[in-house]
Amino acid sequence: MLQTLAITLRLLAKRWVALEEELKTLDAMLEKLTNQYACRLRGRFGVGPHTAATLVTVAGDNPERLKNEASLAALCGTSPLQASSGKTVRHRLNRGGNRSANNALWTIAMVRMRSDPRTKAYVQRRSHEDISKKEIHRCLKRYIVRELYPLILADLADSTAFA
Image (cartoon, rainbow, N blue to C red; front, side, top):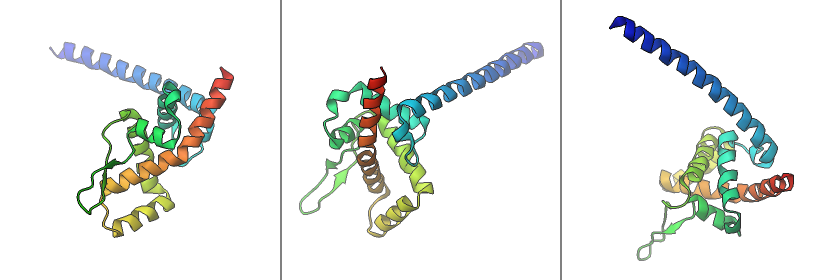
């Protein structure tokens, strides 16, 4: 019984090491590809290789849908949805759209909320206006889409020129 356990643990450890090496190789390839084909996007604060690859892939799979930045926001699930009642005007989070793109925008927003002074100031200001965290996140993701839309289009145009 102990011998079987030792063999199993040894095999698992070898597999772990092999997967770690494979992950490092794939991360290096992704870094190289996003620096080559999404260089403008990668130049923005909080946009890493995984988030850049996700956003370029989503936009590249649906180029006919990207008429303006609002269409990219809808594609990513960050466009505001009306949730007004009576005289109260509210918007709520959009649960539709591409969830991986939405997650990439959420990641960028979280990085900026932790490290970017402008974003920290924005969150602080909006918090004093009695706006919920969800609402602040929604607004931030929408702002990020507005900022990244022209960069994504330019990177897509360059990558099709390479093809």
